[in-house]
Image (cartoon, rainbow, N blue to C red; front, top):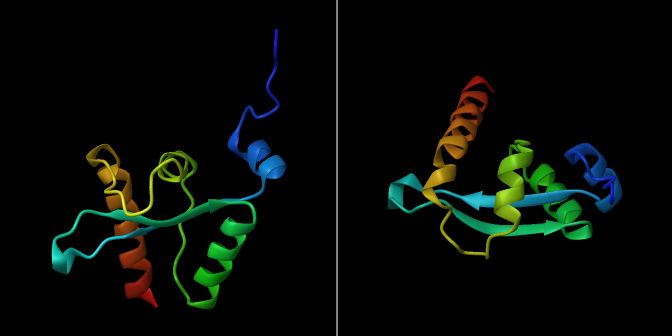
Length: 99
């Protein structure tokens, strides 16, 4: 019997380092959301640094991230994930309105 020490996302992050994915959605062009950058470890750290430097709001959702990391860059995000992405976009819009 094999027991995995990666039983949750917190432990996985401690062992593997951070993960990050960047999505782009431009409602003015009526495009589908796309993954434009993703990575783990050093690449994720760099993505997070650039987001902070450019004052880009970040949202943490482990399940969504797990799905986005496995996608190819430029690939349209599947409609099954739209509800989660919509919630995140609404939160970001509200945060930007309040600042």
